[in-house]
Figure 1: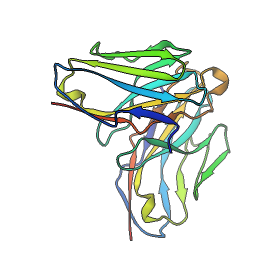
Figure 2 (figure 1 turned 90 degrees about the vertical axis):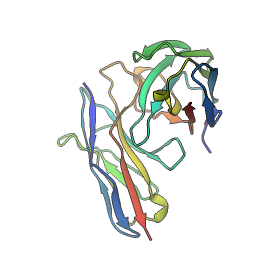
Figure 3 (figure 1 turned 120 degrees about the horizontal axis):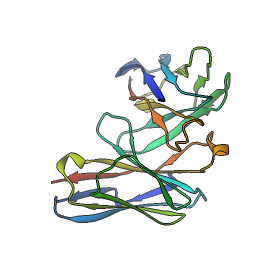
Length: 116
Length: 114
């Protein structure tokens, strides 16, 4: 069983829809991440939150809007997506700080997103 | 910048065969190294890790040794099972870049036949 929970597991949306992906962890981690994974490729980093503040945005288009309402929750708001945005979206969490870089990231099972 | 290079797949083996998946890295400083496994339709699960030179990570019969002199972290298992069929990712976290995220290799698909 994963300790990082993502909902929904599957999402199909049109290009004009607005939807949100949700991620929750109760491990006390203060760093949370969004990754995008295309088929047969490694995960690509999108955003990093550290202590509920956005610390890294990997030049992601504005149609993806992250939000970290508290230390346990991470959302990804989607609007006006393109077909090429269809992918598996993975959330992860870990302890932040230089002293914890040897600690692994814990991943959720992801949301499989299809854009029609 | 940091990078991880894995052997191309797919790797196809018979059950009980010996497995090696090669991984080499480029990073500043002394990174922490990880192997993650992704089963079909699932997210990534941590398989093992090593945080300093000559450390050996092990889990579920898999092993990998952090070799600083060859900048390698090869994954091995003595006897694979059909249930080991998955995609394996080598990854690193470097303390010198300030990044908190992982740098992944391209992944290696393992197919184990009965």
